[in-house]
Image (cartoon, rainbow, N blue to C red; front, side):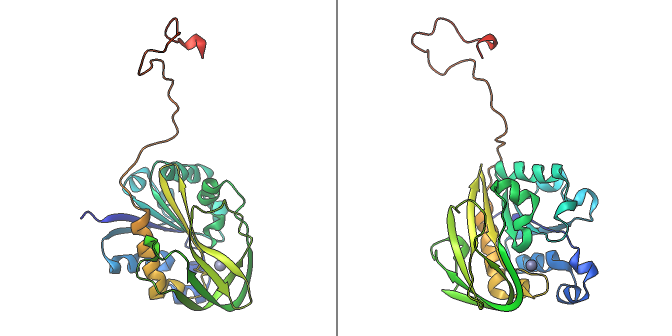
Length: 254
Ligand code: ZN
């Protein structure tokens, strides 16, 4: 079987300026996620960061990407609008897109959602317990009914996104908040997942269960179709004769 081509994009800022984050992710958050996917097998993985030429997302890279992971936090504003729109169009044409943690405010994700994507948050080293609520979903394959991270940043409702097509996980936090932590949407021909955990000061992406979710998600989001949806062609000629039509339509009729 052909490997699924994954690009893991990360702004890569915290790993440069925050020593504790660098200690947890010496190869960057992108490097950790890429290593986990390579270990899972079946993927051809590349990484891209904000500081790469063209922010790592040239047309050639996007042409060779079935699924794009996106981690961003403090540098959302440094992503050019044109690049965000390009990513959005790629997703509408069929590319998979997986927004991680603070990528709820990433420009491409906000474009895909069309809402503010706001939420409540708190950094208090809370336990996060995930409940799998759609056991039949491919993203939940092989997972236990519940799993936990000992410390995470809290994200709470209301999460200002369109009602998800599918809800795979709900999280409960030690402080009592709950959150829709695994949400999927279809956008155009593309599949989108928002997966909540991954605050930079916690070793979340080293966790084996989280890594299983990421691999499952990449398999789910990948599909061969690439068909642009941004063209609305004028159909001058009909498939069948139209009863009562005197003459074929012309441009003057439109
Ligand atoms: Zn965070």
